[in-house]
Length: 57
Image (cartoon, rainbow, N blue to C red; front, side, top):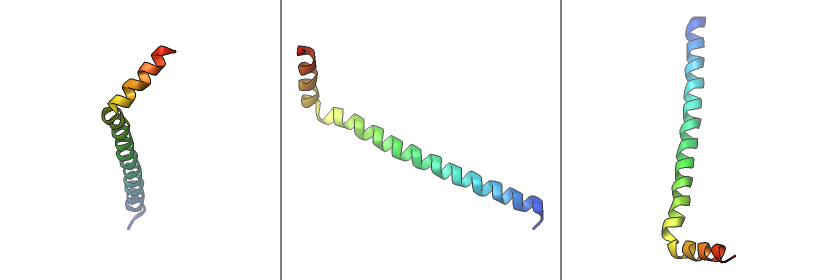
């Protein structure tokens, strides 16, 4: 392989590495956000009681 082809392969590997990192961050972030939102949906009564306690103060 010539030098130009090796350089292209190195850039391809770097690009693939970065896209894998970004995909992992997006997947974990999305799962975390959905879980966070889900806690408000599933614990509606507790959230309501918490808001009432805050408003009493």
